[in-house]
Amino acid sequence: MHELRKKRKFRKLIYSRGVIFLLAVIAILLFRGSLDVYKKKVHSVEDLEKVSKAMDIAKNKEAALIESLESLDTIRGKESEVRDRFNVTKPGEKVVLIVEDSANSSGESEKPEGFWPKVKNFFGSILGD
Image 1 (cartoon, rainbow, N blue to C red):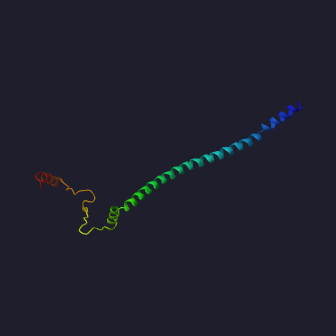
Image 2 (image 1 turned 45 degrees about the vertical axis):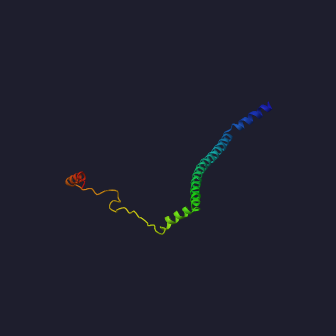
């Protein structure tokens, strides 16, 4: 009988409001901590993706630079680089610069406005003018 009372007393203590409240607080704190860890994991995955993209870009730039350096090891590559940077020519060569007309540089051609200029342009293009 004495043991039965001890068991009842123990159960009463375990199922009391205070113990249940304490366990609920501990559960909430554990849940909150695991939620914080999950958020950090998500951020670290995003950071890893950013870093891997940056790494890919850096590797591509490195490959381009290595290719550029390899081309500079040849005489033709050196000559091309000097010509591009300093606009020089060999003796006997001439430089040709192509300059766009500033009036047509905007991409719009001048079109006559009105009916008669359009008619004149139409017949002029037919007659070969």
